[in-house]
Amino acid sequence: MFAFVFLAVAATAPMTPADGSYTYGISVAGSAAGKTTITLIHTAGGIQLTESGVASYGGTDYAGTATLNLDGALAPARYAAVYSPPGRTIHAALAFNGNSATETGDNGGMTFNLDASTKHFAVLDGVLFSGFFILPSQLRAWNAQAFTAVSPMLGHGGAIALDAALKADRPKGVPAGDLPVSVSDPLAFTVWYDPVTLVVDELDVPAQALSVVRTRQE
Image (cartoon, rainbow, N blue to C red; front, side, top):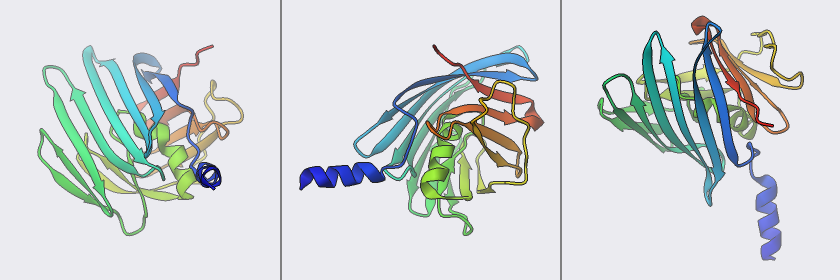
């Protein structure tokens, strides 16, 4: 009986990338600008993503870390980030409770409400990558074409819808079997991911000439 219950739960658990560490190179206008590493682990109640990244742009060094906790349905439960621009350290955190998300941190607090046109929150926090990394898994689990994105780095939240009409050119290094997730508003971007493993291979933001590309380890 207990074995049957366990198998039933396991069979309905959302697909995600396998536990492990995933490293990405960051480039701006084709020039290397930094890297970030995300470590995914499954926990008793869901999954946890931890991220550590560094970048250099315009001769200035930046760093950031984040921890994103998701529940068993891949909905965000908690998020904490530390941003380190030159000479500063800024802390921010999000707590999710039903149809609202509350931000606390060094720059003050605010509340984001779930947009009426969506049923789910996602964390897309500026240049930190963990929310983009897990987005294809979330959209598949939710069977969703829209969500409310929250970015504590930018102090912004709002509805985002996928744009099937946005036909991004496949980057040279992206495998032929990868699928795109594309958004055109408020900022156009495309996430390329493996539909079998759900691992993201590349994120492109044309308006910023920004690319985040997975570093493949043999």
